[in-house]
View 1: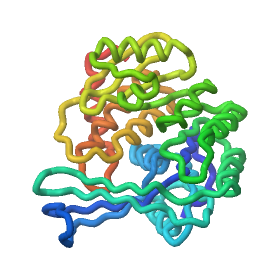
View 2 (view 1 turned 90 degrees about the vertical axis):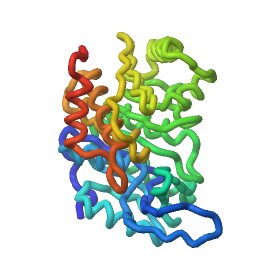
View 3 (view 1 turned 45 degrees about the vertical axis):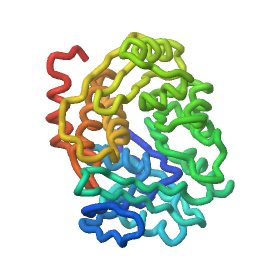
View 4 (view 1 turned 120 degrees about the vertical axis):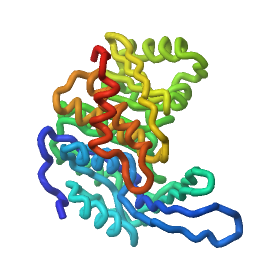
Length: 320
């Protein structure tokens, strides 16, 4: 067990306030009423920040995962994280950590994803989480995933204030009102909305590449975020900062799963930035990891050898 261990250098801390035990299985066909027999069951620790920690670990780095967990299922999550030899600090809560499930239907090649809203978190519990962040040194803090029921909508802005006082960099991967609140405050280092989430953020649909590029570049010029990365699914992603914009296409791969692509992107890009790589180079590394994540079923996020091969393909001939 590596609970409460010292943060490795460079010090990347991840925050997951609504983690999950991620179950995955396969079946021939999903049908109503009938008992669905499944095979190849796996259970892995999940939730945005925990996934980011797993990706960084897979790519050869280390990060400290801070997360809330409790009830009957909390110890199971802790055990799964310890099995992966990840650094962790657990904030105990009374309610049960959620269990999510992905079912792969072999006959159609489709995935069915069942994601509960999560446990009820009381004020004393989420404030204990803030205290843990205050006490933990970091160079980067990655807050990723949804808020749990009972948490204030502005919770990530409270984290943002703590990170700013530390002089660290704040990476945020969330959506909706939580993302808006942090961007209004300003000073975010990196955000990674999907194109749909970005359209929701600006309040309009972007139908063409030109419209996307213009809106994303204009948003980045406002200076509320250092680096804006908008993911486009199989079409790749767009990077923008105050100096301009870069659109990268994803290599063509056989898509087997949509699980973990965004977390893989954030983990790889943050790790690359923490290593001192140039922002656009780190972005290309993130695109490679996001693409690698869709290539495998089951408990995988991305696999290092896939990421490195795809990164070489993406960066070939591109000025980064």
